[in-house]
Image 1 (cartoon, rainbow, N blue to C red):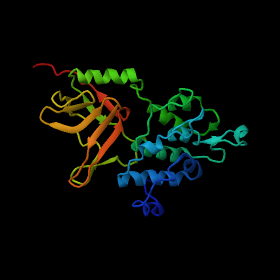
Image 2: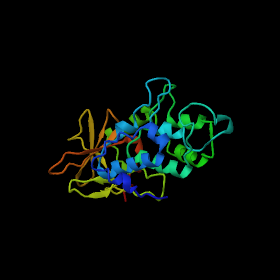
Image 3: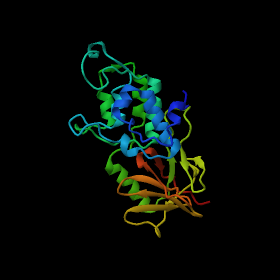
Image 4: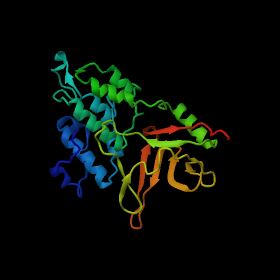
Length: 265
């Protein structure tokens, strides 16, 4: 799958206000929408609030990922007439997966619910008006985290707060050909998002942890990553000498494991 950015859109990167990054553009010109997401990442612009914005404040409220689910695949013959969102749009599985990757990297919320209290996973399971979208549906359902419920997420955090050793790994994009997400570092360059090793073991840094923020450390040194306990986000201080900048990624975009204690020789 191509990950190149349209040069027309790339030229807008310095002045782009992302006014077109909305659910209507997703349906009207999904390739342009995808390019805007790529530009935001390369430019270091945070569009999380925009892509998680509900389309309406009514019964039909959905974030951009739920809107994408309404557009991937072909409409069933009996659904080809009507005035509804996506009535004249058909996004292929391939393009749909590329947009899904970009939304994940940009911080789309997988736990958001619509008016009927359905998550995107409930929504895609029950969606029946589209066909030829099996690959997109199957791939999206693979992202359903076991820690989706707040109760389970809180249980994970309680294990960390109790002092258990854990490992941390950011989930990879669903498109295996997509580049690994980049994060800005204090030195001003780009580096792989998992600047830590997935085998590195962490424990809570009790001296720096507060009621709001859970900070952790390795055996040898502290880190500049922390967990926002109220928002369930992994945060990273990427400030430089001339600019303050903090990265935020939802906790469910990470895999947290608790390795077995090492046995004594």
